[in-house]
Structures are given as structure tokens and as C-alpha cells.
Amino acid sequence: MTGSPAPADPALAFPFIGGRPCLDFVATLGRRHATPLERIPDTAALARWFTEAELAAGAEPVRVSARDLADARSLREAVYGLLRAAMAGAEPDPADVSRVNAVAAQPDLAPQLGAARWTARGPARAALATVARDAVLLVRGPLLERVKECENPDCSLLFLDDSQARRRRWCSMDRCGNLAKIAGYRARSRVTR
Image (cartoon, rainbow, N blue to C red; front, top):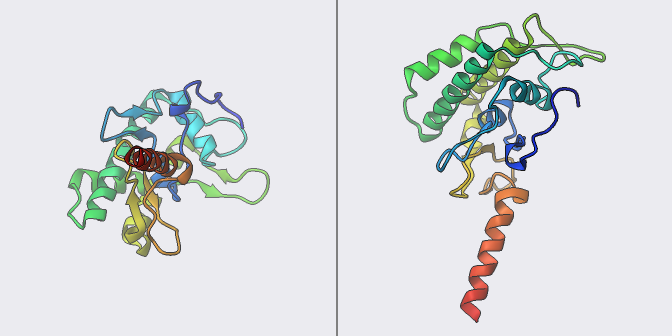
């Protein structure tokens, strides 16, 4: 991987468990229902997210400006608001729709054959446009009904339930699912003592 090194705090590592780029992007703000955890606190972290999300055009890290970072955070919150409204069957905030549509209308990453996966004139803006388009396609498509929020009260990650029975409850069994199993085991152990 090129770009900035992984963060020292494991909580700041990017979870790529949403199943869609827009869901993984929304996860750059964690613990929304508690004390929010900002995983893109600076331009270097956003550049690292683009690389880890495989949305970097070329081998070099994406150059990210302070404006790109502000726009990314604004887009992230608009995508989150749009998804939450769509999941609830509610009308989305017009400002969220406008923001996502404006970014989605920009040139996105162009897929390439060969060593470079993508090309773009403005790689940071193009990566954000790709995320915005993914959000539009998800909200407008048949997969929206499979988007869920993790049932761990300390987690707020959204994910695409790709399980056969469509009964997935946790963002990941390695993360919240395992914590729930441990808590259940401890609760049952206390009852039998």
C-alpha cells in the first residue's frame, strides 16, 4: 500500500465491511450514536482511505486539499442522511439530495485496463464523485432493502446484508457479532451460577 501509514490507534482503521463504496465511506465516521469517531481527521487520512478503498488513480497517493477534505465530510453526511431516510421510507432532506446529486454529476473515476485501475484529471474529486454515484445507484436500486445498521448500540455502521437468509444483524462477526456472542455467554454464565 502506498500513502500514509495506518493509524496507531486501531479504532481509526477504516472498516471496509459495508459491501459498497458509499457504505464504507459513511463508515469513516464511527460511533454515530455515542461519541463520534472521526476516521478522516486530516487530508492524509482521506488520501489513505482513497488508497485502501481502491479509489486511487495510479500508484501514487491521491493529493487531497483542505477543501477536498471539507467536501468529503459534507458528502459523507449527505450520503448518510440520504441512506437513513431511504431505509426508513422517508423523504430525504433536500439539501442532502442536492449535495449528493451535485457531486455525482462531476466526472468520476474512469476504469482502465492495465497497471492503473483508474484514471482521472482530479483524482480526489473523481473518487468522491464515484462514491456519490454509488450512493445514488444504491438508493435507486433493488439492493436498498438489504442495507441495515449494525445492531450493536455502540456501532453505527451500515452494511449490505448479503447473507442468504437476509437476517444478518451485525456489521461483522469479527467485530460486533463477536462482542455480542461474548456478552451473551457472560450473561448466561451469570444466570447459571
